[in-house]
Image 1 (cartoon, one colour):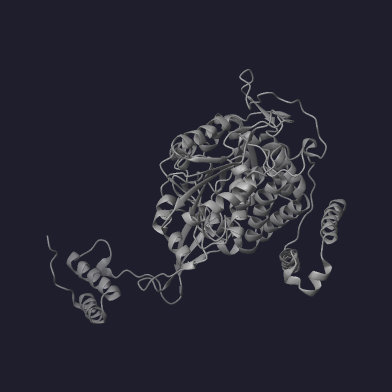
Image 2 (tube, one colour):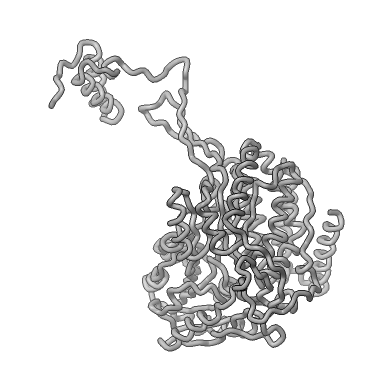
Amino acid sequence: MASSIATVLRDNIDILRTSLLNLDIDLLTTNPTASPLFPYLTVITVALVTNTLYRLTRSYPSVPFHVPVPEESLPGWKGGDILKNPSLQDPARPDQIICYDPSTGRHLATIRAHTKADVDAALAKARKAQEKWEKTTFAQRKIVLQSLLDFILLHQESICRVAARDTGKTMVDGKFGEILTTCERIRWTLAHGEDALKDEHRDPGLLMFYKSARVQYRPMGVVAALVSWNYPFHNTFGPLITALFAGNGILIKASEHVAWSTTTYFAQIARTCLEACGHDPDLVQFLVGFQECGEAVVTSGVDGITFIGSPQVGAKVATAASYNLTPCVLELGGKDVAIVNKDVDLAAVVPILMRGVFQNCGQNCIGLERIIVHESLHERLIEMAGSRIKQLKQGPPLEIENIDCGAMTMRGRNEALEGLVRDAVKEGATLIHGGEGYVHPKFPNGQFFAPTLITDLRPDMKIAQDEAFAPIMAVFKFKTLEEAIAIANSTRYCLGSNVFSRNQKEGQYMMDRLKVGMSNLNDFGVNYLCQSLPFGGVGMSGYGRFGGPEGLRAVCHQKAVTMDRWPSLIQTFLPPVLQYPMNNVGDAIVVTRDLVNIIYAGWAGRMHAVFEILKTLLVGANQPEQL
């Protein structure tokens, strides 16, 4: 552990030394705000102070543990046969998953695909372990999460390299999508998770004033997460963190596209962490396989399901889960927009749009699939974005330095993407750059699609309706706010949205009218870094939420409980006129009528009702039952 800390410190010192060599000391000391490094130094200072305060005030310890890093992710590794036209499955061996690096075609491993028998065995193990786990305290669960967080901080380079090797993403994309998001999920859960799951007291109302009412959040038992391949570490550990903190066990069915990283490293991190903290590692079960495996998980009898994937598969998951009435949270992708109003500073906005479109080669559920720009800024935005896109460097991120865009993780996507672009051009769109697969001269077996810029699009084009999940900046023009809103709402996907406008009123006006689950003003995707917020969409983007209190409670049974507030003074008493068998139903009807009036009528009606009830109880109402 000491050597790992030393390595991290040495790397950061080298970065700082390089920065200082290029620093204009005179400018920084005489006019610090004018120095180009001032914003970075400010962020670093705030982060260091915040981190120091956090570590000084936290009240839960951490347990160190070690997990070997796969050889294939180490610097300089050149092993593995280069597969020509690689495929995950060999028809001659359908029970095996062929794992390879999509940016090079290098073979990584061949792994047995899990079957229904494996799923059943995994569920039995998780249920047994969960019986003990649900009895743990929040303090014990926090030790596990803190230990996991500290491991991630010390080994973030290894985690990103493993993810890069299996998906073809760049290291920077890994830092954003794998590390930063996971660390923030853990931090929020440590800080606020216990409060979210504490018994929540509710107003019992005037009728039940002598009762206390509350909601209890209790673990479901063993839940399942069927997660996508685009961020194999975060998509695995996000639901794991939530499930464990709520007291559940979990089955994680990872995509066959990331079977190597999941089984050889990420699963070992979770299980070793639990074991080091004194808990049964069988609490978490990792499964990889094809359709049979996924179907077996959904129908296995787990107590809750989270699914991240396409609407087509999501509908099948919901249908299969309905046979056991298993509750589901479905996140089914998006066609997210960025509306660029006429008053923005493009010099500040374009870099954000570039990150939103080309992060992870566009393979993001909340990636910017549509840029809707005011017509007065259209030409300048195309010019600014186009010059940047043409300079993007593409290739295998662990083989070549300074890569901006890595590979497409799924094989066979290029033909469909080229078809979207080709059809749009036939219908009047203008292709500025890219639009086709890219064959790298040194790595011809890599799976690349060229960064693309296309404009003059209309909402009725196929490229405007289908989720591309690719490095394509698709640009639309608008004249009025209403037109921008109409374009944004023209797709069946309703996940996230982003509006850029200096005029806060106009920005808020547009956001309020977007039919989506999430919106950001003057930023991209930052709602996911606010882990206090729920994440999810509406329409074909799914239902249910993960993240925030809503996400924790989604993996809990919500139990309504009432108790006597003053048990020695007052308890429920049923007067004889209302007790079975009833001697005079007419009197019972009068009493119940007046009881309703006492609670809900105006003051005159309440006084009259009290008098009527007392009269009925003492001498009877003498009103026959109306038949």
